[in-house]
Image (tube, rainbow, N blue to C red):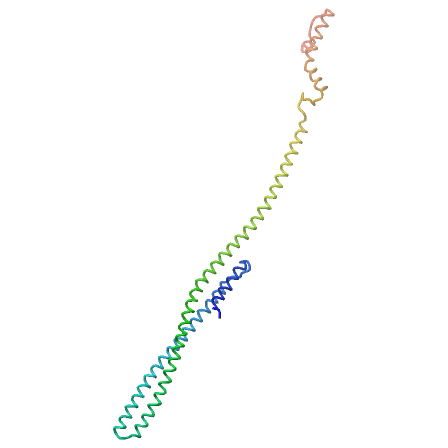
Length: 244
């Protein structure tokens, strides 16, 4: 027959091996089992003490019966000395009854001694198993507490990882949109400003008109000078006349 404490250890071991997420708090079950073992130890100790008490009382009875048998024998001797064999016969008969009770008392004391020895051995076994269970109980409770803490941390980290992953995806999406917006903004800025003057793609006609406008004052001055030479008129620049 297997040890009940060993079976209990095996039960809790299977619970922890099956996955901490499916294990309920074992503290109550452990403490309940510990109290049951304490009760078993107390009952065994109480039974041993009762047997020892009965054995001690039987030992006193044995002494009294033995002393009574000795007194009966002494009484029978005195009766024979007084030539009263009838009284001696009564005393000896009583002595035999007492000796029979002494024999029964001895037999009962031997049986009680066997029971006491067995209970004492059982008490020692339960006490040792209880000590081992108390140590194992604390280890199991500590392991459960640590496993529960690791589970909570793992769940928190899992949620954190999911959050960070989602945020990272949103950030990358935002960065892509930002790059697209920046590219479009630069393209629109180029269209609004237009090409640089004198560039290869600027209109040639506009460029030529601008050059002509830049030299027009000198051209007008030379035109008036030549007209004066041809007609013999005084050389008065038109521009100075206007300004005058």
